Image (cartoon, rainbow, N blue to C red; front, side):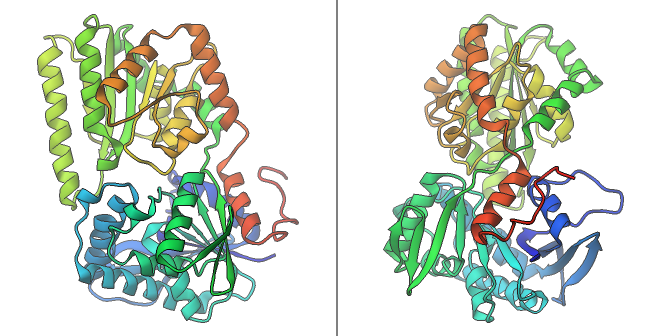
Amino acid sequence: MSRIVVVSNRVPVPSANGGQAGGLAVALLGLMERRGGLWFGWSGAVTEETGPPAFAQRGSVGYATLDLTEAEHRGYYTGYSNGVLWPMLHSLPHLMSFRRQDLDTYRRVNRRFADNLAPLLRGDDRIWVHDYQLFSLPGALRGQGVRNPTGFFLHVPFPAPDGAAVAPGIRGLVQDVLASDLIGFQTATDRDNFAATATEFAGAARTGDHELELGGRPIRLGIFPAEIAAREFAATAASQAALEPARLLARSIQGQSLLLGIDRLDPTKGLPERLEAFRRVIARRTPRSATMLQIAAPSREEVAAYRKLRQEVDSAAGCINSEFGEPDWLPLRLLARPQARDTVAGFMRLAKVGVVTPLRDGMNLVAKEYIAAQDPSDPGVLVLSRFAGAAAQLSSALLVNPHDAEGMAEALACALDMPLAERRDRWQQAWEAIAGASPEGWGEDFLRALAPGDLAALPAAGSA
């Protein structure tokens, strides 16, 4: 049985005392453990000099990690990945900050990954490359003579050709990723935008909905929406709702309707627009009838746009509370620090309205987690940006345009006042869309598409 080789920007090497795995690790580790695997990428460390990969073994899964130098981290990660590609892919070109040396460093780091990975590969390995930081890796691997089946999955959106064209260097990066055998996306829109960009700028020809051709070689395109373990998350939410953090929150809101937002503090999440919509809702409702908890954990604080956003969100929150608050009550609670995933699950079960309104998002698993966390007998309502990938599956949510503060305010008010029968109906439709899926199933679907028949002998997820 062939081995799975996963390549990602960061490698989730398990610590000696365990710890909670991230979403990508949850999706892939069970599959890798059953058939053997290697996870390759950046260690997360920044050092003075480069060196060979460091290795760790946990059961049947090996981990090979490279450090980055300060110049590599600044150019590859902070500069081009987060300063150019991230805003371009999320259709926010005004946030781009380009330096030619950053693009050069980005491509050089991708080549260094390929140079160090190639000697570790076996002839029957299946290679799965993840996300925009490694657009150049498939091409660099082919340049090393690697001919193993290679798949690439983009976790974030992909814009239309004119939107992609604003990123200097995008033509070369698209040509590099077209060295893959299979390229996966979260939605059909992302797939079609990439295909149009590849034909317009990289010389590819589209030969079908699910295929491109370049230089006589076919490249398959697939749609693989990321999933959660919905039934498991539902059980966690139900149990957490009875524990102290959720009980303290419930006691503090004293019967008010709770609106809940959970995001990274990122310009793509639409937090200023969301707070403006909430301000309009509070201005029109009876005081103390509703309160909002917004969890916004800081991220990428070395990037100027993120520091500016923190100031903007803090200012907006302060204005709402100073305008509408009372000595013993504040309408908005802003937590700019991360919360444990299990604890948040309990908060979700209490929330009458889940507010997920990014300006653009590849999927947004928080939307699916909110649905899973609800009490089926008395569920809350999901208010969801139509520009989140999750909207394609969760069409029974109240879909909004996150650029329209008044429209969002109307949707929030509708959610707060929605009758029980309609809430149940909308929740049931959303639950049916996610209940049968799993992160591991998502991984298996991709690998089956990459190497048809290769998983035929593999036991199904969860089987003995």
